[in-house]
Length: 323
Image (cartoon, rainbow, N blue to C red; front, side, top):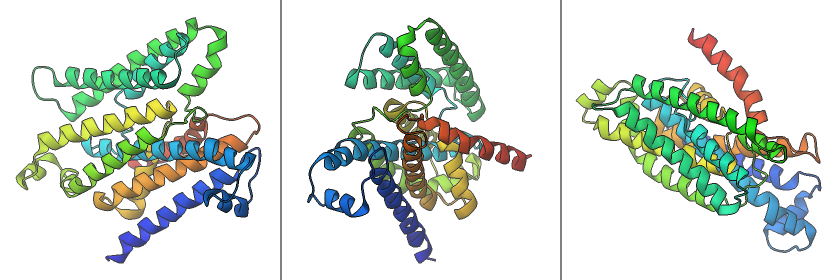
């Protein structure tokens, strides 16, 4: 029994390494495995070295951080809302980030200021949804979900208005960002730091999450501080989603599909499910982004297109299975 979690995590780590190798090796210019090894070891120079270390490697790290954050946020939200179909974007966080990011595009803002604008929009949505759901009393899971859906609908209307009034020269970039785009992701370090800090914070409370998943009354009877844990889950999941949206735009279905695949394979022990979600979510998005780069090369697809192609049939299957 002690070897099973270790073996599973080792298998997922091998999958992540394989997806990184595929991402670094594949593209408009193929790099052989031997050449790739020399580049990573620092024994090579030239255009291949610049291509791998300055373009593909930062993009692969960005994809891993985004996938890991979304999968972790999805697993947490499914505990918080006690809804197996909960998704990181269900609370409207991506919509708030999209509105401020699109306004920044129209204003010609780029670089760190663009990322900051998307992050501010996401965090504003977090505060707005939590404040409206809390009201004058305590908030419930159903009220939080309904407020999130309503706020997300409002952001969707604003996004449509922005797209309808935006200059034609900006529409392509806006649409790519809305569908999830990692082509401009060059600074993965902040997202990786948020992901590492989130794992170190969340995994130690996984035992409490196991109890809370069975019901709040039972968790409270067993000594779990339910209200504090709910607030920590909500803030953490929102921060993870905001960071992912800031880095890669709206990449859908990762937070829905990955926790379910793991739950079907491993059960609902969050001590194993949470780190597994980070590895599987990150590896899958690295693989999806690589396919988005090479399917119709030299043109690139938004990575959100491929995640949707995977997520939609899985979502429909889960609905049918739940019924």
